Length: 318
Image 1 (cartoon, rainbow, N blue to C red):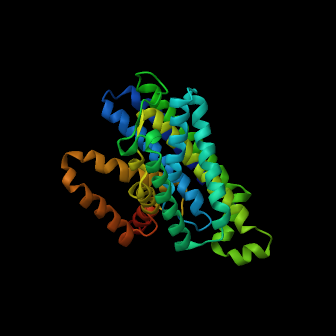
Image 2 (spheres, rainbow, N blue to C red; image 1 turned 90 degrees about the vertical axis):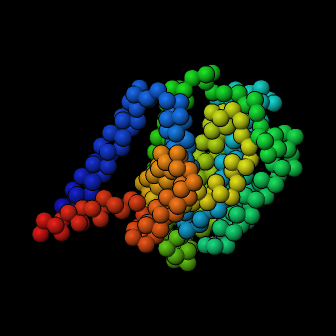
Image 3 (cartoon, helix red, strand yellow; image 1 turned 120 degrees about the vertical axis):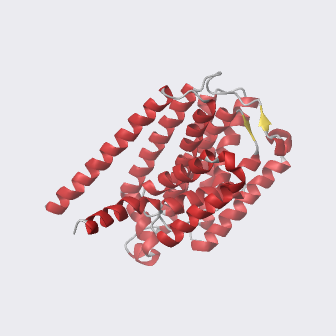
């Protein structure tokens, strides 16, 4: 009973913290005027959502090095349909998410049993292949200079974009959290621990890994579609290998073992270099310093800081 009560209190505290963070984020745009700061917040929401979606895939032990490619599929699907098909962006954005999910399922079935580094290599080659397709059809994708003239969601307004991406982030995180806590998430974790044992109790490795890939890619495709209409111009160079590596680093540095890990990792690693943009030549060293600190001092990721701090404070009071 005490353990159950403690767990319930912990969940309550987390819920209160989440509500407080959301309330603060709702109030923030009323206190800022800088267009750059607005853009910084919006892009942070985008990358937090994308990094969290990558962790959903990692629940089963699969790590993608081409996740930005699925983000690009959502972005280009929505942008092309809105620009050339004259559809409303509000209709094409869900279609972008669905397109990314469908491609993920088609790719996922043949390679669902491919594990660890081999899956990472497959995803890497897939990402390179997607960029090659964009290059071949450069007449429609805008070549390396980018596709311009993408219809915006809101005409000439920053505040609606802020609240849209905030709402999208909160909704996607809620769905991903529920996905992890339901039976599917439990099965994915079982597969990660031992696919042999999981199979012996009737858990289909292919089925659940494809489900994780589909959910992960729908979310990243949806946020990619929103990004395209916010930016109003996209280039496939924005979804190259470094973009995928960044998402992976956000997840690993934040902490892959916790749902909050990618959220914290993306927020810190995207925002901190931007705060020191005047020292742009030193940004790679700052980035490397954070990575080295986490790898050697905090293998559990930045999400482990509160626990370590709590343990240190307890030891000081003994």
